[in-house]
Length: 160
Image (cartoon, rainbow, N blue to C red; front, side, top):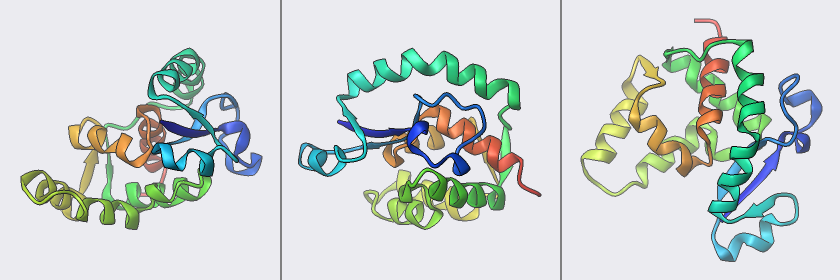
């Protein structure tokens, strides 16, 4: 199950200008036990229904996103962390905060994948948008590929 809020539910002062209001601003994977907690202020859909919901709205979101700027191929470590802090507050998604990401990596099962994730998170000078690790971790943090593009655009606009 996925619980989400649309941009219409984000305070106007905190949402991007002109963004399609019916597009998900934040999405979180939830369990059956959590449905009642999220139904209060989120829309809750099955994974399949959520995918359909997003797919129907993706063209409008993409056309809004792309004319503004291209998604940077890479950003610095500081840029991505600052953008994550800002977006975690804007979207009310604490799982996006850099400290939460570090905690998440620490809870991964021991092994090569965890060690590589940690090395990338802590010691990379730059983050590549094309890095498969970023795309793999995104859904675990409640982020769509469009959120990642938005994150990189935001990070790329930060002073180097």
